[in-house]
Image 1 (tube, helix red, strand yellow):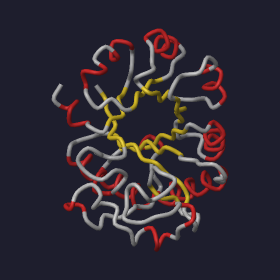
Image 2 (image 1 turned 90 degrees about the vertical axis):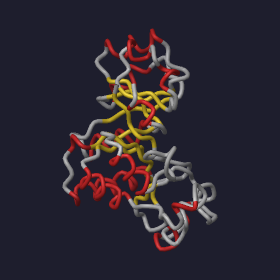
Image 3 (image 1 turned 180 degrees about the horizontal axis):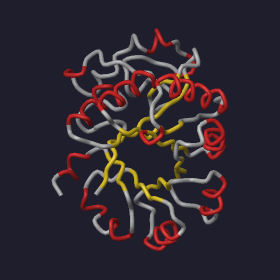
Length: 238
């Protein structure tokens, strides 16, 4: 039963922080899932939301803030005083930690309206090639098909997974367009027949975000390969 720590072990540490990723390593997780977007300086940073409002003591859009401004924010106190002054990490910082701790990383390419798809993908490539990380340690995922097409051109050896909430009727056609490796879908909407079709076509299936193993007991028999969860520790006891 494979799991990925969603934004790190985000049930025990503030999401998308080095503390959450380190927690995953401490717990023996094989995979972490992270969200990457560009800041004002065109540096890939690891944060989910379009703004810093929810997960820091600051305010404003990530795309409008310099790295100095972003990393001056407290990204931990909202979760617990234990994590006071935890910072928003860059992709480079995150991948350095992952490389050191032998974590595999599902990089979700996070795009909002007016974001520059090509620039984000190019900057992600620059970080990865600069760190000389093995392709087997990484996986790209995105709701944005165009972003995955760009990554297919830039870093073709790194596998790609297409994200959906509800799987569309033309799912298999879209997966073929990017020579996908995996399907990433909301477990609440996946059906057994959809899973059978996807598996028959040769793709892996990763479900997000079931935080109680009992919610998805039957999914393993459907052929689901991994659960992307805030609570990987709950699955470790099964």
